[in-house]
Length: 226
Image (cartoon, rainbow, N blue to C red; front, side):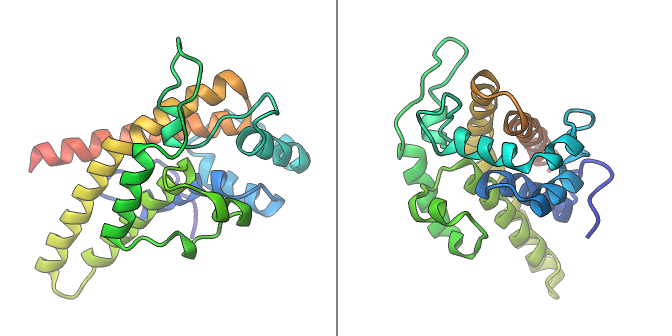
């Protein structure tokens, strides 16, 4: 499917789903030439003029090293723990991270159980799969992808009225999840990366934060109008 020419509105659940999936992929897998090319297709609309994609694709190993330095090697000097529990403590004045596996991780585990979300079905870097906590930024983006998929699937059900009611429930769940978790998580994650490791991942994190904020505003506005 072709990448969107403009940023999807909240009513375009398929477009929103694909954007969230593209953002999740950035943080859940080490980059490859093929993967980075796909990210270019999807994220160019969200990152106009921000990145030299040709340079990135020319030096995949540098981008790959940045991935590990930013998210896996605490002694790298570029490390930013990609977990909501850790990054919520990071502010302009307090440039330190909180402890991992905090209340956010435990609440998200319950959210997964409530919605039957199974990260085992995702394409994830295997060491990350084995040790990842539920409040990983990439998994939060993937969870939002799942919620959008669920809304799309029920909204096209044969029984239109019941399908629309179920779609509304999934949309409400999205609004609550974004407000409670994804918006604050990306809002702290992006400036932390920009401070500590400016570059590709910091730019994508900033776009993710802006995208999430825009989506939340539209979800909230939609609720007010009903």
